[in-house]
Image 1 (cartoon, helix red, strand yellow):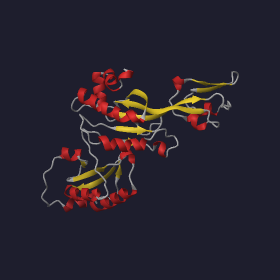
Image 2 (tube, helix red, strand yellow):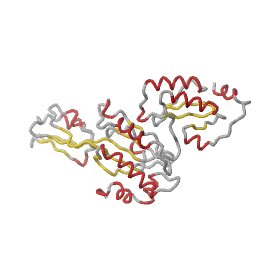
Image 3 (spheres, one colour):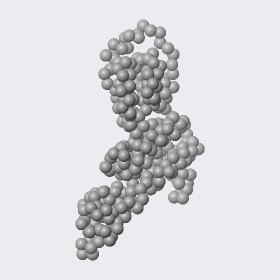
Image 4 (cartoon, helix red, strand yellow):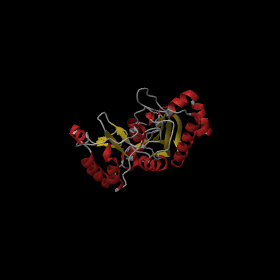
Length: 302
């Protein structure tokens, strides 16, 4: 089917275009002549049904195949689109407010899990954060691609360890001894071995060095003796996957919601000052040192 679509235009005069600028605009050249994959924005993997319906209509109209592709970063991609159809396709999508995602050296669309909105493990509002980060920073020019993600708990489905800047939800548990009935359910629920029951001393022992702040103890406690002392974000910086993966550095624990945007802005400012063209944030960290980043973005923790 894709070959048939290409044949339709083989006699047409080909317009001049710049592949790099098209890719930056979300039109990614395929191996087939004059055919592109069009990447659409879906911050946090969230797409209103009205937009989904329009995407199906547009894909049926302009794509040479009977499928769309869901990228690993939650974008919807319409493949096998001919270059001559770009403007018509864009206008059709604009009718429902569906934007095309950008590529290239700039802030990309953030990814996110379901978070506390519907995920039973979720501790933080990942979806709300992803939508707001996209609204504020999407398309901001950088030295290289700049990826952000939001995971609602330490399971880290949104892979914050692989992002230039990642935020993972965490909760600091505290136990009320008076209401605790020493049932021990929390000790079985804790997969990290941070909790144990001392039956002789009639105490729950808590080893904070093993705790990953998942909140499982809070969720299973039948008397609600375990509560959240504080909830926030574990911040990671400098991650990437690809040919030469790098695991992000953990730089801050329990960042409150209201400081997420300032952290992004300070990180981008530091990156603009210390980075180089074609260099990812993690490479800048390795070259300049994590201490430089900490001093600029989290001076109280440096």
